[in-house]
Length: 222
Image 1 (cartoon, one colour):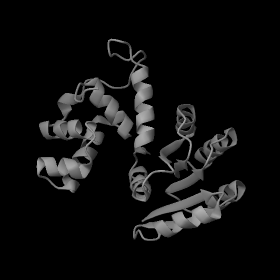
Image 2: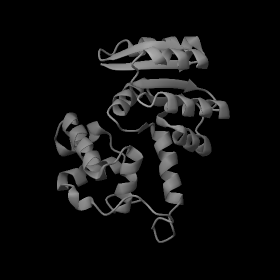
Image 3: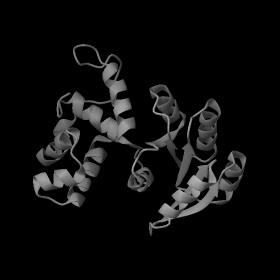
Image 4: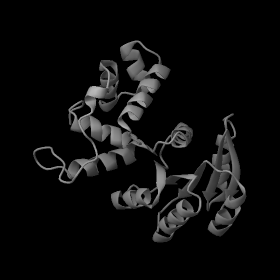
């Protein structure tokens, strides 16, 4: 069972998220609050795996709130749902300690996917946020295509099987798991298993890290 909590200053939207999560058998929401101080206090008495925080505009006070929660409750991963897609705000939110970031135009199904992914120990970002982070990485590279600063990745593509490289290339080309499965005549679950194994082999934590690895090792072209 995955235990969640919701912080949303707008009660109507909070109830909408509650109702959606209630349809998931293995997700149980144990706390819903609209006041920051109440949230911090009530989290003491509950096991919370994923804390969903909904903002419209992310302020400095909101960033401080994320930092406080991460320090006080390090076992509760934070998933931010926000309207803002400004690069500086996204980066600051992630640096503050958010393990996931969804924009409010994300599909509802992505919320559940994000909860599962974050509970599994990985980061999760919506497509638009992934694009922002990837573009930031590309902008940091020199004209010859090499990073302008020390990068954490080594050439480890040899650790991957030919099938894993094939799946990684198709994913980098923008295909969904279902489209990859159809292309390779395998199941969606097999695609997901391969992607999880790739992340584990390379010790990567997010799809952004995986995309960076694929670019660095010429598995996908840009």
